[in-house]
Amino acid sequence: MPPLAYEAPVAVAGDARITFQRLTKADLPLLHRWLNNPKVALWYGVGDDNHGYPTIDEVIAEYEEKLAPDPKNDAFTVHLDGRPVGYIQCYRVGDYPEYAKELGEDPDAWAIDIFIGEDDVRERGVGSRAIERLVEEQIFSRPAVTTCLICPDPGNKRAIRAYEKAGFRYVKTVWMQSEKAYEYVMRRGRDSDG
Image (cartoon, rainbow, N blue to C red; front, side, top):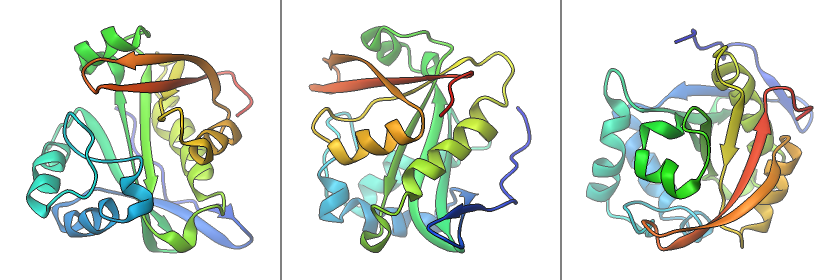
């Protein structure tokens, strides 16, 4: 796995900078607060049913595997000028065989999930810039990876616009039986202008 290169900041809205820190156990109360924010809970939750407003025990159960020495998901908190403002993770689609089968995409593609937890940071370009950076430095830094996916709820128009700004394009809408929900599949290739 290539080393993480998140020391150099990315400009957002003037002089603001985006950095990442690997998720730690100490971050779980913060994730709990964010996942109980009504604007986050509307689209992002925990468990197979993706339910919002989880208890702290549900957050711990959901995220503890991401804290293991060699997790399937690379999980980070997103920081804006040193302040934690959101969560982002990436993973190889094929590491979740049922998900890959339902999605109907290349198992060697990588996928991203993200949410911005702080209300005052939304609609400032932080999400799209964080995605651009993660794609370039963590996903496409792997020579064999040529495709990145992000799959929001089709009704989450704000997220879809942010993902388009990060270079993702709509491919299809898929009913995910395991999640009892539709996913709006968006793809970005290694050579996209993103």
